Every structure is written in structure tokens, then in C-alpha cells.
Length: 295
Image (cartoon, rainbow, N blue to C red; front, side, top):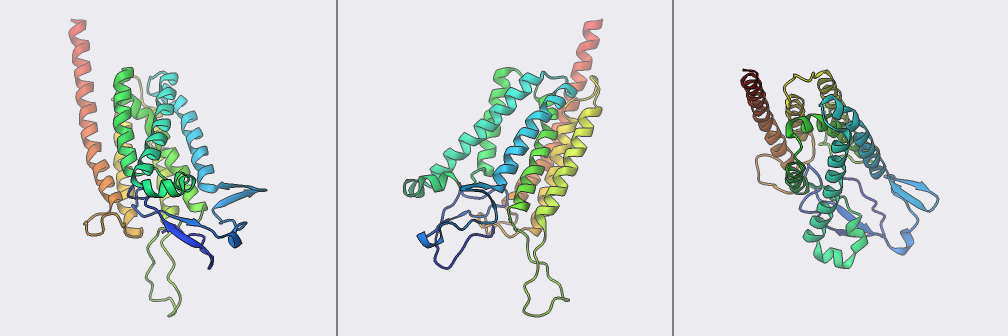
């Protein structure tokens, strides 16, 4: 779990963030310091005078801005309106923020009434929040009558870039979720170092960004829409599934064969060929329609 700020005179209160903390499904721990410990700043914060800025929050904000800026280029590669893609991206960000906060409060009503600011400051983007946001965005896309497959192609590199920034934020703020490495060469009594899964995740996310960006950039107006998104889903699912073997076990489903993150990874891997099949069927149907109109 994430290393916390635990001086000897600190009172600790554990609050569950919407049943899990991120894909790994760990519990978030919020700590209430006593008066004697006020003034101490955890290493995961940037201190600018009296202002304490979380490092992860800085990288999350930078990642969102970079992803939105990139969407203006990928929209043109996917033959979409940059303005429409920008509006869809802003809608996704705002809906994810609102939905995640509502779920956080709903799963922690008692803690919210006792420590409202503390609960709202917890990381709250969970698997359930992402799923509900995805359903909401499908409704938004249908309402705005946007083409789904080209939009997913344009969004794939942006999502991978955001994942890269979030992974770097976890790495630099001190998160260490890796399992201990067992080595016979370690002297007795010394703790085994943990697997650097945050570094592995950052590398995998950047490689996925490079792959999806190159793929959507190389696409021509006659290319099959949805291929970039399918590639992104498949390789992201593989990375999530196998990297989770190096993470600490999830506390959400302790008796399950797979951790929640691995279940998500398997779902992404299985969704990729289904998306590719739909993209190919749509491309064939469009060619037939063009031939029919030509005749």
C-alpha cells in the first residue's frame, strides 16, 4: 500500500474510497494529525511556502492538459472536428470528476459527515466510477451523433498519454505497490526490495502512447476506423494483467482467482477483437453502400 505519514503521535482513520483505490483495489488511508505534528509535510507534496501541492495532482493536471491538446491533432488524423473532440474530452473529464466524488461520498457517508474536506481530498477515481462514466459518455456520443469508432481512435493516444502522466505521478509521489522481490543473495534480516511496478507501468503506458499515436497518424481517409482503439485496448489489457502479478494483492476480492485489475485487463483483451470485428463489418458495409450508390 501507499507509504503514509505515520508519526508516533498521529491518529489514523481508514476510509474506503468507493470500495477500492484505483485499479489495484487497495484501501485508501486518511490520517488526521495531532497538533504537535502539524507543519510536517509528506514527501508526496510540493511545499511552496504555506501551500502544499500533491505531486500526483500536479501530474494529473498536466496529463489532462496534454491529453486535451493532443486530441486536437488526433481528431484531424481521424477525420473528426477538433472542436467536437475537445467538447467530448471536457465532458468526459467533468463527468468522471463529479461521478467519482458522488460515489466517494455515497460509500463513505459517515466519514463524510465527520471529515467532509478530508474525504473529498481522497483519491476517488475507481473502477466503478470509470464504468459509469463510460456509460454516460456513450449516451453523450449518441446524443451528439458523433461517429464512435473514429472518436475512439482519436481518444486512444490521449488516454495512453494521460496514463503515462498518472503513472509518473504515482512513481514520484512515493507510491510503492510492488510485491517484495525474493532473492537468495540477500543477507538475512534485510527487507527485500519491492518490484518497481510504477516504473514498469510508466514505461508500458508511454510505449502504448507511441504505438497508438503512430497508428492513428498513419491512417488514411480510407483506413478502417477502430483499429487504433482495438490495438490500444489489447496491449493496455496485457500490460494491466501481467503487471498486476507484481503488485500487492487486492483487498477488494481476497478470495477471487483474479484481482480487480486483472479482471479489467482480461475484459479489455476480449473487447479488442470484438471492436476489430465491428470495425471490419462497418468498413465492408460502407464499401457496399458506395458500390450501390455508384451503380
